[in-house]
Length: 284
Ligand SMILES: Cc1ncc(C[n+]2csc(CCOP(=O)(O)OP(=O)(O)O)c2C)c(N)n1
Image (cartoon, rainbow, N blue to C red; front, side, top):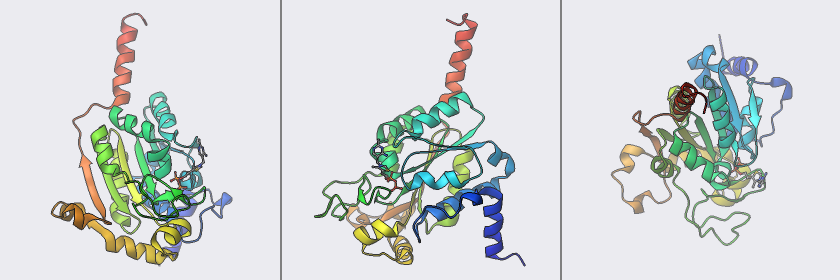
């Protein structure tokens, strides 16, 4: 019989650089679950899709996610992964380009690249791993830290409101948007599959457990299992959230597929049309 453990070995052997294991993540970190979501998405999409995929990541614990995969991956500068990925997509338009970023990497230092990639509708899949603070550097406040939360840089409580990534990216022009937590494994894996097949800027936010910092500082739950239970408790499906007041939604994580539109032109195709036009005019 093919057990769950055999299946894990099969996935690891097929897709991962097991020679550089053990990995850098803390015990109980949710990034391993995100890795598995991505690999399961490809297991279902098939080898063709996997072989034409390249990964790009920024700096942060999340930036390590694709580096363990047996595919080309560029570990770029903090906040600049989307700029690099846009250039990669433009030079190799047939590639699936998947960008893995933390919440600080994408919405903090990389916020400008994020809104412009969405505005241009570049055909990229952004997987945004939100853990409510900066982990790699020791637990500082990020743009998704809840108001009032204690972090290393907000010892008396965070006074800043946090970004709602879904609203931000919808307004900027993204064409596929979903948010899940690591508790919603199957739904997140399905959204990743959809995003990879989608032509345009797709972003999936996955809220994951960082027991080392968010667990200890923000939630008072250093056990990752308690964090997973908390995700289950506070998650509200989008349909239900629409019937709830802002007060009722305080402290909740709204999950679901937020947007899927196909009416906006994709950037890479437009650039290639311009190149063709310019070449017809004699290269001027
Ligand atoms: C230009 C620049 N500024 C700051 C840093 C330091 N730095 C590295 S990772 C990081 C934050 C990472 O947080 P996030 O993107 O949320 O990822 P996580 O580690 O939480 O997965 C910071 C501030 C850097 N490497 N480069």
